[in-house]
Image (cartoon, one colour):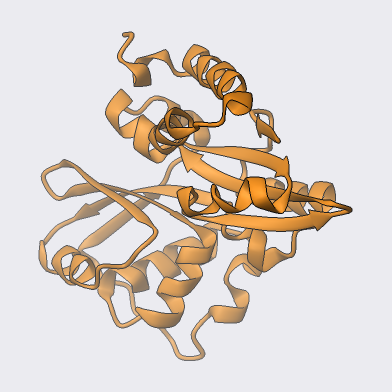
Length: 222
């Protein structure tokens, strides 16, 4: 089995989508599961945040970084689900209105509401660039900076690993299967430390060492 960290993929969401489509022939709906964005949110009141958290929506990395200031990371797939299923929430309305101006239209065009949406004035959003995410404190960077991985192997080899991935896409190619997944630094660390097959341990250790050279502070070395 083969595992790779693809460290040189495009960082902009639109460029990453194009890369996934052209390089691996991924359909848009599946590619959306692998494309993540991170936002900084400032709330002038607690109500919209509490209402949002009450829904226990999966697939969102959420941290309070200052009083009423938060960091959110989620996939485009999760964003689309938020718009389809939770647009009654003030926070989701603001996310939709803000991101509809920041992201390519094809990301949310088919899930956009037919009626007009009014923004809440007590929620302020900022979309973080990859460079801004690399400057986050190490404990936040480990959770919110997302890396892209590629695996190839037989069905038997890969099926036991799929439960470790929050989002993944499986593609059959000839007699082997390919798996594409996006993991945070901390998720990648947990996954590679859990690898038990001897044939994969050396590869897992090499990938971890490579990640560590890029983000040593996330491993407690700074």
